Image 1: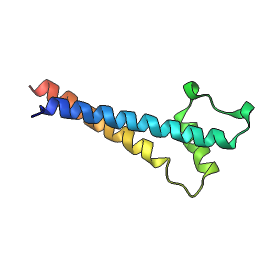
Image 2: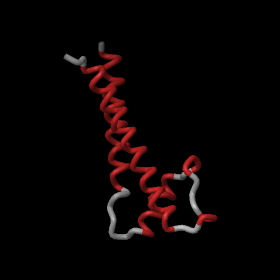
Image 3: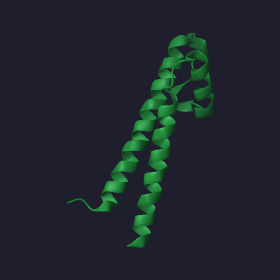
Image 4: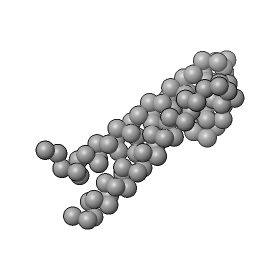
Length: 88
């Protein structure tokens, strides 16, 4: 059986990875609608600007909420992980 130490660590890692995938997905969808010279590079993205641009280009989509929720869960599990580490 897995120790809660590893469960919390893996949950935090999975949610952080999921948030990264969704931020890249948002960026790809934004870049698809822009001309080549105005596209946002993948390694220099500003996540606040990314969310605003996505809401402007896709006003009826709520996909921009998913990476923020995943990031929040990742931080929550990481705090729980750290708390568990120091309570041993």
